[in-house]
Structures are given as structure tokens and as C-alpha cells.
Image (cartoon, rainbow, N blue to C red):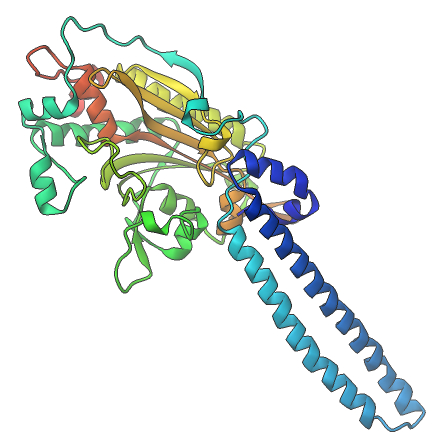
Length: 414
């Protein structure tokens, strides 16, 4: 959640940052009114408490002077009842403000470029030259049919559209990629963790998926439980409502999970193939750091994901996201986009974000800095999305007859 104290004290400055992220002025005006309501409710409450204190001090004076305290006692009791009522009003005003604040995205870093959408993102660099084919490269669904690797029809039969079945060498390659990603991440200092694939609503609120993105989640009927949309949720929330020591930081975690998303806003997009599925495998990196450590760790995570793609021989580019394309929780995001020759374009394969203290404030993850408890910074990113890497290997390593070579670094895993 955003820092409400900062927003209240520096409303114009904070509003400019949120407008950069795409928050509309009507929402900001609503926030301003909620702040005013809360301030007024707290002022009225404090005034009533002050009056009660003054009357309470009169008891001793009345007793010494042997005055009748009946009327004073009645006034004090009446004031107590008024304070209870005013406390309820102030609490409701605070809750109303926090409810709206839960749907407000994180402030973008000052370094984030201006822009409305992905067209305004900035390419930082390209890594590896795309292969020049002496034939027209096929798209991955054509290659899947030739090799019997992906069964889209039976995936739909088993579940519904946007589900698929990997068979034979494709299933083995998927498993090889998961192990390869985990091994590389572990070598970089990330602790491997195996987590539940189902989390409760408190955890999803902690990392920002709830309440705003509930429509994109698969909820378990009759339970306060959801299928996770990314391992970022359980890995970050391992430390939900905990106070760490500064010596423990940074904490680097990696884990494989399937991910489940309704893709509610993607109707008509990537309807063919495996680019946008309801269920997909991903290996995630999560870091929990001090504010001073987070930028260095962020750069390390970007470099690690790029290094994995380079080891696989997959051309890719590094993209800085503009304000309008940043995710809800992100203060800054670098995307890695892999080259798909069949589609003749780069497609996102990893998104690495620094959320600063946004998730930590929601999830109450702190560390002790001397005598103070300070919010940590949390970071997350894919290393990598497994299905999209499989697609990239199929298209980049295809032969003219449709057969597919295996990258050298994966042969031991196969």
C-alpha cells in the first residue's frame, strides 16, 4: 500500500507521481476528501477527549470543596458516550480511506520514463543477434504439430480453452528448463523453496493482487483460498507480519510453481498457441532487502535473467517500462523480451520489479534497524517463464524440416 502519511503531507507531489502511473484525477480528489473527513473526525474526537480530561480533573476539586458531584458525574458519563461514538466515526473514516488506498497503485520511481502504454517503453539494449534463416521460420504451434509436442485439443477437452498438454520431448524439455533455471538461480545465491500453490486472501492482499485483481484469480469455492497467479505471492509472504533482523537481509528466494490466471482482460489476444495460458509454469526470484540494498539486488536480478537467456542462446532485449505500463505494485520494472522468429517479434519472457516498501506495508514485513522497525523492500521477477522459454527454443532452434535442436546447456538435463 502507498504511504498515506506521505500522500497527505505532499499531496500535489504524490498526485503527480500517481498520474504518471495512470491514476485519474477523480480518484485523487476522492482521496483528498477522505483525508479531510478523517482529519475532521480525529479533531472532533481529540476535542471531546480534552473536554473529558478537564471535567475529570474537577472531581478532586469538588471532593476537596465537598461539592455535589452528581451533575458533574452525569456530564462525564455523557462525554464518555460521545467519545465512543466519535471513535467509531473516526475508525470508519480511517477504514474508508484505507479501502480506497488498497486499490491505488505504487508510486513510480522518479527515474521511470513518462508514457501511457507499452509503445512508450524504452529499449535499453539488445543481447545476441537473431539467427538469419534461409527458410521461412514456422510458429511454435506449427512445430508442435509436426513433432507431436503440444496437444492443444486435448488440453481444451480436459479443462477449457487456453489449456494445453505437453507430450514426449516437450514434457521432458519443460522439466529440464525448470531444473536448469533453479540451478542457475541457486548458484547466484537464491535459496530454493517449495511452496503451496494455494494461498489465502491475506497473502494475496499482501502482494497486491487483492482486492483490485480478484477477477483474474481462480478462487476455490467455499474457501478463503485462491490458486496462486505467481510464486511471488507465497515467496514474499513467507515473512508476512514478521520483524526480521538487518543481519538476515538480503533474503534471496527462488521457487518453481505452476501459475493460474483467468486472463480476464485478454479476450482475443494470443488465442493460438502457448503464449497466454490459464495455467503455466514459472520459476520466480524474490528478494527481501533493506532500502539501501534494493537497487543493487534489482540490477543483479535483471542480469541473472538475461544471463539465463544468453546461456540458452536466445536473442533478447532489455526494456525499461514507462509509468503507464508499470504493474500495480511496481515502482520500477525491467522487462526482458525474447526474439520469436516465427512471429517476427520480441515477446515478454521476464518482468523484474522493485516494489520498494509498497508490498511490505501491506504485508507488514519489517526489519529491526537499531531500535526502530523499518519496512523492507521487496523485489520479484521471472527467471524464467517456462512455457514461453519452451516456445522460444522451438522457434529459434527449428530446422527447415520442422525438427528442433536442443540448446547445448540443456543436454545434460535431457
